[in-house]
Length: 413
Ligand SMILES: [Zn+2]
Image 1 (cartoon, rainbow, N blue to C red):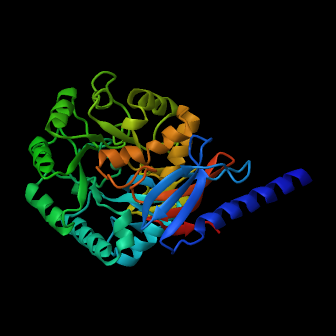
Image 2: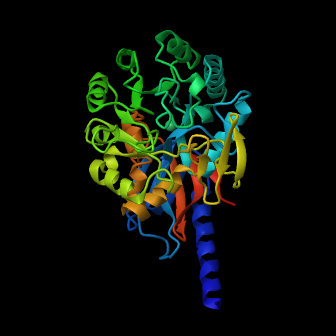
Image 3: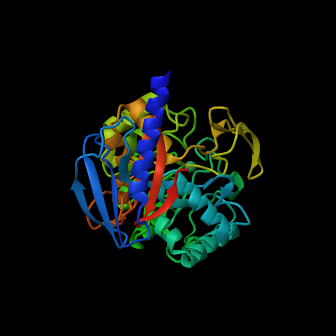
């Protein structure tokens, strides 16, 4: 017992030492961040200058220790509907709320995320895009973390099951004029639009988006193999939360999962929260796509980070179970997720036998590559100094420090 307490104290002292070393001079031009790379063996000192990674030196660790401090690129989560009681999809969004949500993301080690706008009346979507864009203009730290938005709805399947928890009354066919209004409100910051390829006008819409350089993801759909292929030919490159946004009962041959999984040009995103996909699905998706072609997303909603209970969510009754599942009983579907993306990183190691390196890649380098975020996503000289320092405690990833553009934006107490 005593030895255990001594060991714990030693671990804490060591963590404190590393944090002190890392956080010293955070306001100065030059900082050095030290830690183990996710390969578990290489200990590096990362020199930061003017917010960029200046140099990465392999050095001898100060001490051999059991609670290793790891250093990795800041996490990238490309599907965040909300968090900690704040939603991007409700009326009354403010710059202050966006800042609060961004701080919550930093606490979870996320340095880049896409606020995700779902199916709603046109005016609400436009209004929230405007509010987001104004907030980014007023706060450069926010715009460093939010390169743009993901418009997941409203141009998705209206059919129960495929539609998921999106409101049926507001699901609609692609409308270029309406979308142009969204694009204008967002001042061009829509990075990706979700589309069901099988609905009327979807293919022409996909083509127009690609011509503007907007990413297309296949989302909440029941497309045939031919429709998936055509959408990919026209420019779709992402499958949104593959295996979800899909009816509970589907045809064993003709369903939307196989054609997306088998298409080499599609990078699926997956929700590896332990509820949305079974272990076997995670393993198959990982084996087929590999860490370079698979992305982890949280799909977190405003109920993420809240205690279990029954909530009213956009006028619907949603239940958060003890183990963090968000159920929408009226449709027998899930209503988004309640865990941050680092939970997916942990789960992929346990459920799909990924290494820490591979698992992190799916929430850093791979989304950076898919969305052309060339200035981040890796620990590499010349890239922006977006980093996390973390420990692994009882199998959980515990964020110790989050660094955005060389500045410490979260420090564990
Ligand atoms: Zn969805």
